[in-house]
Image (cartoon, rainbow, N blue to C red; front, side):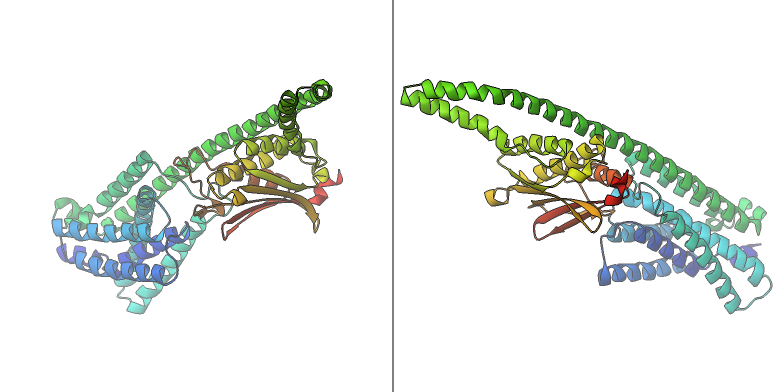
Length: 440
């Protein structure tokens, strides 16, 4: 029986290639930290380490077997940490998924090779063809499953409990499916015989499905949280619009009081008092300098309100906006677009000390059947992007960073899109809305 069990032990090359391809899939399905020759070097080094460790492992038993296995797992985790743009916690979650995927594919392939080639004394070329065929099918399906473009969110943030449970599942699956191969002289291993191959494959498949269900549940929870956060931010922008509108009404009422103030200044004979009154009058008039006339009352209110806020912070808000054709966009959506964009711009510019760069410019114009809303501002901190959107610089990235996502969702609602450019210290956000929407 020992001889038959030894014959069933999977060669290390099968496991090594499966683990390497699994890491490759998850790395390329996530933002990457390394690119070019550095990425290629780490991937090649990982493959060589996995082959060396796994080939050594298949010829040992007992505790040394677990030692070599641990080295292989460490090599997989190090590869994911170095290559994928993930935190160590997220990389650990990715490692658990990649490991179980590799175990299942390698186990299924070796079982097919054993039953359809080795037992029939097949050639090495037949073994290789079976391996290539099953690896191609299984990993192609895994790639399509992970890379689905319509799935939101595209990246998930694993917390400590999520990562811990995924690692526990991976270790449990591996222990149950491989304990017989680590201790082949036990009664349990000898009683199973050839059935160990099937047991291992079934257990690995069950673990793979369990981890997939775990990941989809985590994705659903994150999506629900993001939608709630975006909805709260959306309504806060609309409430801000109403506050700006109320302030605008107050300013209009104060306009009528200016006539009485002018009459009082003319009647005043004391030059010092007259100068004092003129200074106060000038401060009042500065409020009217922040009023914007774009042809759209909602945009007027948002720009005017944000201009007052900019003035308090020593930021110059300049607009070249013809927003008359934006009447097909609802007031709430316009509030979300302009409110979020200007909030982000103000937060970025207020950290700049150079007064000439404390400036935000807004453009609204028509070009090639598109209404283009463009926001430009300077920035002095390095920007990093994930899924085409800048990552928030705030410490709690889970609770922040939804402003531009809201803008993108609002643009897509009208068949439009959002483009972002950041180069040479200048940040540019473009919202493109097809003008054909304005036909009804």
